[in-house]
Length: 263
Length: 199
Image (cartoon, rainbow over all chains, first blue to last red; front, side):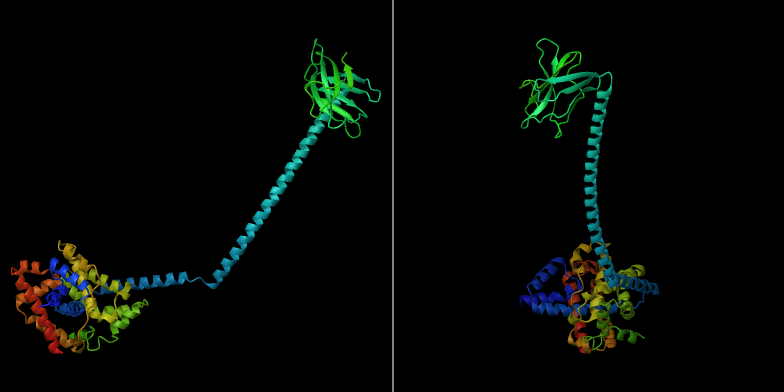
């Protein structure tokens, strides 16, 4: 008896499902090795075993079972069709998608354009605001200068010069609003030099207190406002203006061009 | 009536050709509900009778029959007509499902779970299967089985309808294991020879 013959004796019982676990495992291992004869025998045995179904007494399922099944199957068939239909995108929908895409691109471009315009307008507004603030500041200065110059409480301080070529300047000191120094036809300092105001203290050995610097305008006009003088009028005996390097100096580096005593 | 029912079972001489069942199964792949209805009407009684014989409970049997036919509907591609006739495949599927259900309540489930989780194996119908008139075959199956020793027939039925193994049958019938093995093998061979003779 060959190994194949030995296993073929188990084939019918295997098809019937009657083999005990050990025999079943050994036959399955043999089939897995590729025995064509046993595989063929198993196919026939399966058919043979299936014939045993006709030993069952005749019986008929209920109509309700048929109804349930057909209902389920019809529902699944409809669901399958609707799923298939919904997966097919009609031509008009592609058109709508394309239109939506174009609109979205246009919207993006328009949004970017508006954003740039807003940024430009915002910058312009900032510039205008800066201009306005500057004008308001200039107006406040001019208004303050005007009050200092016209207020009878202001003290007039003529500022003479030893240079006959130089015009005389005049300072007006208001105790609360500050000092205004003004003049006409003031020559431009050489190079980058500037004119600097000094407050000469009454105290002995008092050092000159540095104050504002200013270059006259191209037309020779000179108008310097010192809103917060570094020394009080009572403690100051004179005002002086020297020519100093650009930015001013902590101590005078030249002799005063103009000098005005406070009486 | 009975003969007409048998004629509808797909065991006729031409069952290996493109049978009505094969055509209907192919239609299921296209989700044809009418073909499903025809398949059900052709085979539901045979399937139900088998499942009821195994489970012995009508309600449970109907649940299993419903599962079997829904599996046909949902997985029609699982049947390969090139490898065997439809009806033996369907009956094997139904038997496996019914035995699975039976084993859910039994320790015996563990013993055969691998086998029963799979789709039915291919059952290649021999030549005589095509030549035997289906009416005569069913009568012959019953006649041949009726001609076996009562204990021998009982052993085969315990294996087929209750899914018992050789050892379990021997315990139940209180017969030696070798005797049971011989009964079953000889009984099946006698059935096979009888069907061949009938052709």
